[in-house]
Amino acid sequence: MTKWEGKSRGTVFGYKLFVFILQKFGIRTTYFFLYFVAFYFLLFSVKGTKASYYYFRKRLKYSKLKSIINVYKTNFSFGQTIIDKVAIPSGLRNKFTYDFDGQHHLKELLKNKKGGILISAHVGNFEIAEYFFNELEEQSQISLVTTDQEHRAIKEYLEKVASKSNLKFIIVKNDLSHIFEINNALNNNELICFTGDRYFEGNKTITGTLLGKETQFPAGPFLIGSRLKVPVLFVYVMKETAKHYHLYARKTNFKNRDVNGLLENYTKSIEGILKKYPTQWFNFFDFWNDMK
Image 1: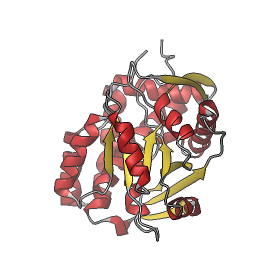
Image 2: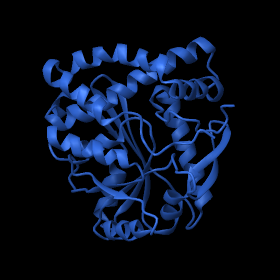
Image 3: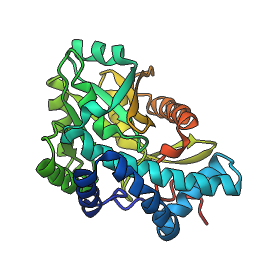
Image 4: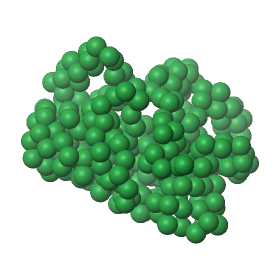
């Protein structure tokens, strides 16, 4: 299996490049450069291109030509999300608009003061959610549970060039001390966010079906979400136009300790999102273990 190696596509150097262009020329010009960058990745990011092509060709059943075109569009969309992660905290939040679908679920969750679990995926641009959540009447603190060490380097760099993010990181550790951090955060009425679609080799996994084929998902988010007796929401931040986002918050119902039931709800939720936004699937590796 071509496993995820613990680093997201997009490096600190890539962020620095986009910051330079953004500061010198603005958002529109920075987006323009993406036409060339997206084509470069189409040709030279072999693993990423193959993985995206497989997603469109085998899972969404697109034609060969349509699959190639959409691989390019995915690269372009991914580049836009990187730029937006820089632009929004750099004082350009007012340049973007958004729709909030399911806002009442978040308000209800925060009013109960028991904390809550948000499960997202590597689709859209969830990391900018905090800048929109701040407009809720209730104060919310988001803690992102992650094994991706590269996020920390990117976060440290962004804090030098943009307003400081309130997003907290809870790093998964072998000694399981992150479980205590999660419990403490929930006791403080914080929102704990997981991404439920990536895992490290050696980590416990569970099997689920996404887009018609079985694959492995990290067990942690679904074990914790099904056992802690706090509300669980599926949350996505999807880009619709150059400067417009749509935030989705969906409450999910499942039996206590029903791990598989929670996972099934999650995969169905992602499938619904991908039908609307097929070019915002940003898992550039052999997700289904099927690229022979």
